[in-house]
Amino acid sequence: GAGVSQTPSNKVTEKGKYVELRCDPISGHTALYWYRQSLGQGPEFLIYFQGTGAADDSGLPNDRFFAVRPEGSVSTLKIQRTERGDSAVYLCASSQSDGTGGYEQYFGPGTRLTVT
Amino acid sequence: GQNIDQPTEMTATEGAIVQINCTYQTSGFNGLFWYQQHAGEAPTFLSYNVLDGLEEKGRFSSFLSRSKGYSYLLLKELQMKDSASYLCAVRDSNYQLIWGAGTKLIIKP
Image (cartoon, rainbow over all chains, first blue to last red; front, side, top):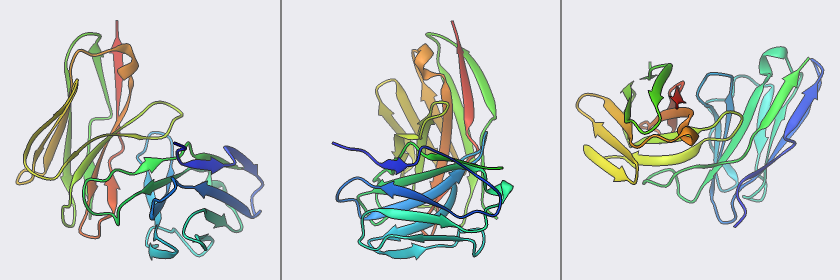
């Protein structure tokens, strides 16, 4: 079956611009996660959705970052007034559980964001 | 604070065995995961431990000691395709994954 997909695969934007990153999870997965990963580092948690609601947004670095999942499937991560420090690979993952148990997270290929 | 420690890089020879260690200090513990990540690709799941002991899955095994805050990933019969980063992640009391920085494993012929 289809895995997690993310678009675009690469995004180059100028400092100060607004960007939207899209994630399409595995069908039927209720849990959706956004991470960002810098070179040589592990993924850094941003936000977790269970269904349509953000169950935990404690990882969002500041109010320039926002994410939605209006119908409990596709999610969009929105970044306003981008800064060079936002440059990273943004990973989306989905899971069939509510986060408990041994269900693993399935990751998408990521969106490489470069802010110039 | 929460902390996951792994060696930054390891080198091993094709056909050999390598053990990658992970120590953790987290607020609560609800399981430990190992993921493999090839350069430029997304992490893929390898193993899950929630009880003490060894979990074996083919060439890969993972061990957990909760009292010591310690896990290791054991890779046997190394192949060139095993060259990748190996990420240790602990699920904390909020059921969120705390990730280590990963161990880059280099396999030499």
